[in-house]
Length: 272
Image (cartoon, rainbow, N blue to C red; front, side, top):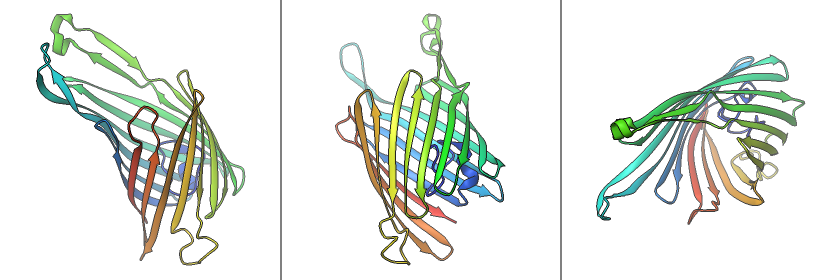
């Protein structure tokens, strides 16, 4: 998604894509995950004619029903953790085919009772559009982001302060697209010491069948390579124009290596 400028674009992955998106879009995503995990997204994206764009997004993640027990093994209560990210991305075209963007992301994490922390992270991205088919993007994420934990709130004089610095993510992406028909994107991510390779594609199979429903159905698929392990994802999208609006629904399934079942994401959105 680092270099994708077509479809349901968001500034989360690379703020520099926004000036090329030419849309107003709002969406809400619900995650269905195993092991009592929770993951939800809320975002709005808008291009600003003629050369800019912005995006606002809110992400919530957490784990519930954590079994707390005493030293004898008796159940005390169910605990939960929650983490939020509120972000604002803005970008502008420097020249006709080159854009640069910046994201400010506020993190809030509540780990246990009064154990909580917050931080501010910065993302920066650039995108170059060679032509209508090929785009290249690059971004760096979580500059300055770090959590500072103070356990003295719970353990008093036995507590201590720990600083967890976020690993910086460097992403490079290349996308080839035939507008309204197909695109495929390859991406390299370096997260701290970890390296990932991602490949994803989207196809509109009804484009050649009927004029009225060219983009009503999208088929999507992707694969991620990490430490010689392949992680697959599949999905589809449905959309329908109603008056001046386009209502869309997306479904994605991601296989998870260490989970009893995969991650499911359901998105409902509106394009203006």
